[in-house]
Image 1 (cartoon, rainbow, N blue to C red):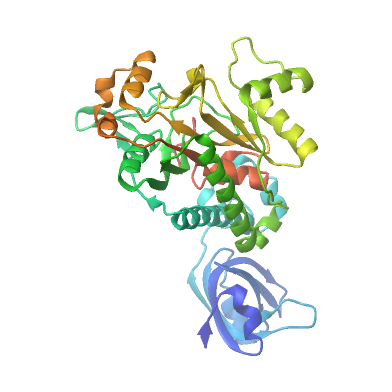
Image 2 (cartoon, rainbow, N blue to C red; image 1 turned 120 degrees about the vertical axis):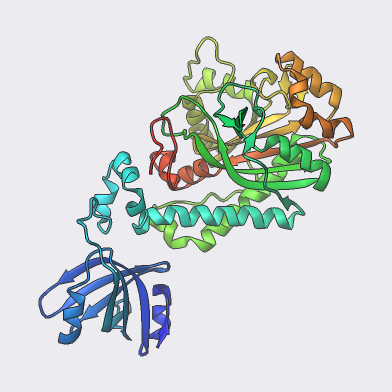
Length: 430
């Protein structure tokens, strides 16, 4: 008797099989019981009618780990099911469930706080689990595309001696008596490795000690990073990302059709992604879209990003929009300047920034001058500057926020729902 997964059931009609998983729901009708078994591939219904098996089935509690063996049958127009012949309880659930994870209406109305407080349990719900199946597909597609473009995967340190951005949003550590920080970004290491492999990418956690408790912020998230050498401008990076995003969305649509359907999610399809300089975007916002920026605003706030995306969705039918040429003053010191502007960009997706990128300064003297203009001491960045002293090609790159991308694709109410175990201003557990 072969052990199969639930999604393979249709191929075994008329045969005896075994499935193993959790008892998602148990219905006892006296002389008949129905047990929904959830495994990695989905769910299947086991029907229990034999008297000897009913006794074993009544020991099954919701979420118990079980093994069910029996014959696969199918009635016309109905899904295949198992006529259970044996049931083995591997580990019973000895407590009342704090949340009803088998009832979608209950799960959909659950508060974010409850969803996260009981995270080891709520993640078992098929619809919640689907978020992370899609997330995994995005990571896989990101890696496979870049490997096909001659990128090399790297793994950089997450404990560092100085902040990438040179700002205050750093988590400090006591590192054997020395001051250290959690990495805000793999940026410095990506650039160093461009001098080694020319094209590199990384998928890993980054940390921002920002005092935000919003639907778009967490303090630890997964960043999809890439950096590439011998470019002419940031447009080379943008052109690569357009092809990358096409590949990611195509793979998610192909591999996660049932998961996307749970959220009614529409995967973007596009040939190109429109671009707008930041100054042009600000003019459009104030002139036509009713945006009123704060007096000291040089960037865009969340409301402006939302208004812009709604406008381009209505006028050009696009879910994606590049904003380019941000002021150099609001970009990191390593951004390539163009007068008071910079060769930088953001990618907005349905009203939210999901990517930041651009061309970097590759000349040692210019990089030092940019640091000093920001009040930074180049001596503290000596290890980073080492590669620039010995020749670096023109280069650039980007970082995609994985959880933000998933949030926007599925229409989730908060980015925290796209994190397995979120770390935010108020949450350090589970």
